[in-house]
Image (tube, rainbow, N blue to C red; front, side, top):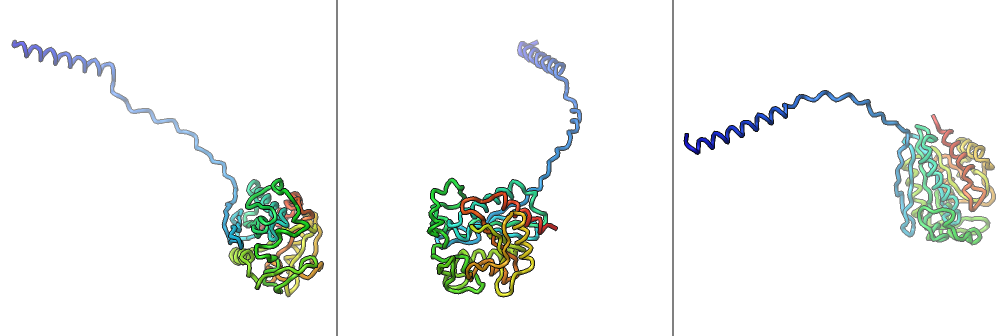
Length: 298
């Protein structure tokens, strides 16, 4: 046998033997067993309402006016702080605290209700009195001189926003015996227009304004007296929050107020005057707000 053929035969036998040993030690794979059925994953459902944020307008000095919504119901309830800016800074702080509470306790919002909060309708007034913008705490307030000077009550045009609405509007109005500028016309100020347009968009069933200080809840009226539902709203908040209830404000003449304008278009509105200029009186207003939510629950 030629030498090359011998080498070829030896090589072939070596390769064949290697293949045989490999197949012997590595049997062909079998079909895997069906995996054991895993228990279903159960997700715990929560009733957290939808929360949204929107810029509804800008102030004279181009600061954003923001509105927040909580819940998805068909009945809109609106709460407003800070119409008098830094002069009533605790009304703004209360609005932010209420927003925190609504986020952490969504169960208090009835399924048929959406809560709207405008924490600060007068951001220029807050900045003028305190140098602050946006969210703040009581510790950020370094002086309360505005409570004697009135600084920060008006907007950057020096207009009292709560005299700039279309209810018996006049160019000048009054505040505690002082003459105040009510603007060039009803809704001449961008902040007042922002609130008007937002109200006309969401069509709230009721509106609550936070102010300070008097320790009472006041009803609203314009030309045709107090709406019956406004009296119910006033008494509901006042009773739960342990505030006084006043159906008619007669301490001094007021024209062009936002609550009166709402009354003129058939929307119940009340003014909650806190009993302090520096405290949010949290427990009182938590109770009052929860009572109002319960009032509109279906």
